[in-house]
Structure formats: C-alpha cells, structure tokens
Image (cartoon, rainbow, N blue to C red; front, side):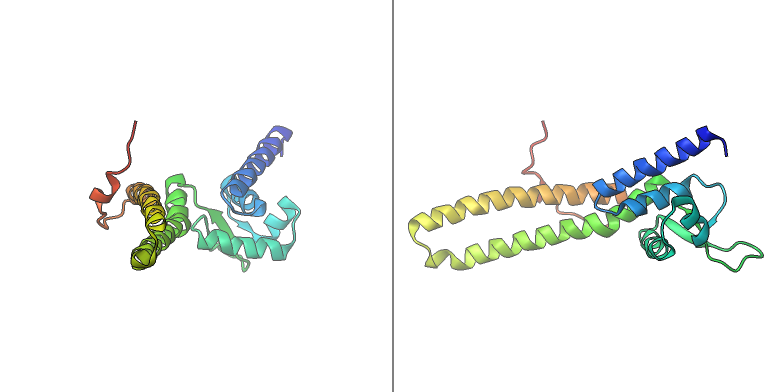
Length: 178
C-alpha cells in the first residue's frame, strides 16, 4: 500500500482512538473501529491483529464491545470459516446507538438520584431547625435547576434518537436559553 494511504489510515485510526478515549471508551476500540471503517472489505480478527499489532484476545474482546455498541457487525464471507467484521458507516446510527445505550441511562440515573434527594429533604423538613430548613430550600432550588437541566438533556437525546416517548415539557421551562 502507498505510504500516503498508510499514513491516512494510521492518522485516522489514531484520531478515532483519541476520540474514543475522550468519550470514555478504550483507545483500542477507536483504532479497531477506524481500521474497519477504512477497510473496503470485511476483516477477520487475524487481519485486525496484524494491522494494529495487538493481541488476538484484545481484538476479540474489543470487537464484542464494538458489536454491542452497534459500531461493527459480524458478516459472512463466502468460502471463509473465520469471523469477519465490517464497521457501521452511518455516523448518525453510531451516535444513536451510543447515546441510546450509555448517555440515556446516565441521564435517567441522574434524574432518579435527584428525585430521591428531593424526597429525602421533604421527608426530613419537620425535623430541621429553621436555619436547616432554609438550607434545605436552597438545596431544593439547586436540585430543581439540575433536574431541569437533565430533563432538557433527556429531551435533546430523545430528539436525536427520534424517540416517540413523551416528555414533561413544563419541567424544562426553568432553563433559560440566551
């Protein structure tokens, strides 16, 4: 392969490795995805090991992760017994897969934790001194702002993902967009 093609392939895989790390994934995941994305033909685990100079165990485990995130899929190659893989090339689909898996869960968890905090503060209100009640009201105001933010994030995720699930738009009105 021409040195320019090799350089572009390597820099793309390296760039995707950095991007993967930024989003909390492993470098290897980014490198594997980049390598598959730039390959016009499906690649076997052995092909990927040779190209990236990493162990077959590492490639195999990371490929399972890529499949789980919908970033790559196993494909059948006529006359071959090995497993072959191809990258999902639709970037919107990749983004939807990742957002619907991880980020949506995290936003839901944040909203759940904040809701529990509100319940705890409300349940303890009669046991608090006047100063503590004032601090509890301050906490409730801050938590309401956080809830509004995460509900807005949830709305944005649902918009990107094309979800049909209804959201509470009234709760989002606390956010001021300038």
